[in-house]
Length: 208
Image 1 (spheres, rainbow, N blue to C red):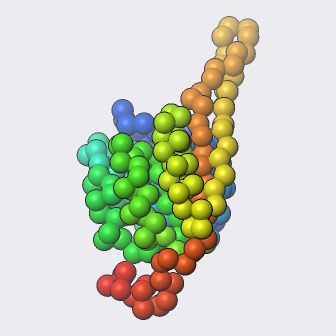
Image 2 (image 1 turned 180 degrees about the vertical axis):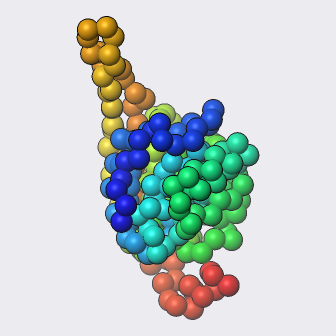
Image 3 (image 1 turned 90 degrees about the vertical axis):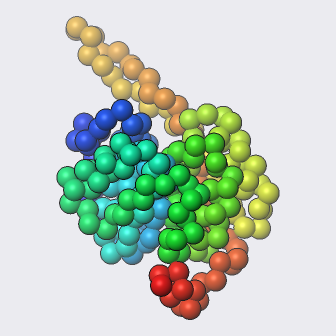
């Protein structure tokens, strides 16, 4: 597997929000990806997290869902720059498009466009038992909605949440001063139940 934590400035960037390096590292670490995993990145933005995930699942595949055309172009440009060939970009507003994808092992959600609950319901039907859903939340409202969803499915999911505050030192003359980045909540939910058929027949149907 490739190293984690590509420098932020190495990505091709526009005006689309990007998940910062430290958050990408923690998110991928919590995802516990294996080399053959299938991953969805929903609200993929510039594709920074998609690229990091694709470099970890070299025999697997990443599907990046992004509704903005600028973001779609940036994801493709970054995939080309970092030579990841196991990344497919879908220009769509989730949950649209999820039903066409194969079953997955991990779902990364960075942007939901006020459609978090239907997105979670859609990926629940696609996520294999033992798979993980990772949400990066900036607002309390998004975190609360996600927690409400997983609390309503106590037999299906077990979850944990961490709050991350990153400060970077910035040189100002002879001094180094802390510059705070946005505080982020990372929620990791583990799928425990067997609602999704794990059989080879189901896998063949999903990939038909």
